[in-house]
Picture 1 (cartoon, rainbow, N blue to C red):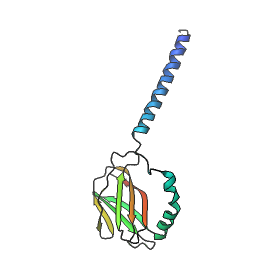
Picture 2: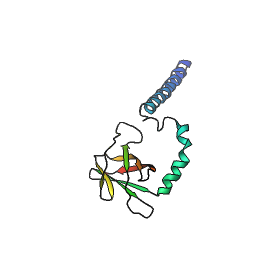
Picture 3: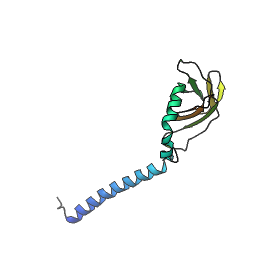
Picture 4: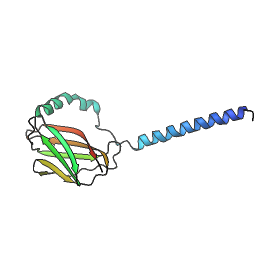
Amino acid sequence: MREITGKHVFWGTSGAFAVIISVNLLLAFKAVSTFPGLEVKNSYVASQGFNDRKSAQEALGWQLSPSYSAGRVDLAFTDRDGRPVAVEALEVLIGRTTSSADDVWPEFQPAGDVYSATMDLARGKWMVKVTARAADGTLFEQRSELVVKG
């Protein structure tokens, strides 16, 4: 059996710290390089009208149900009683929550009681960020999750 010397302790400790620092640097790089960006330019300014926008949206009583099947994304907007509602303006961002590389802004068209867009989504969890306007101009914003199985 060999005797442990100061050199052995030094190299063992140095190696352990090298591994720890390397992993931390890798994780920090991945966190920064995959961050999709800010939600708003100035969070303080955005917060000033939040309660008013929230109250107006809650007064609408709308519910949003996204679904995906056979290469088609459907968005069903309903009122408090479950009846379909028509939206005046509709913007939808579909992407992954952790990266902006797959972000798309599909054009949704009315199709009966839903709004539909044709697109192929890979398996997994997708974010559906909807901005719509009611006939009276009230803004409706909601971020939902859509899980694609297969």
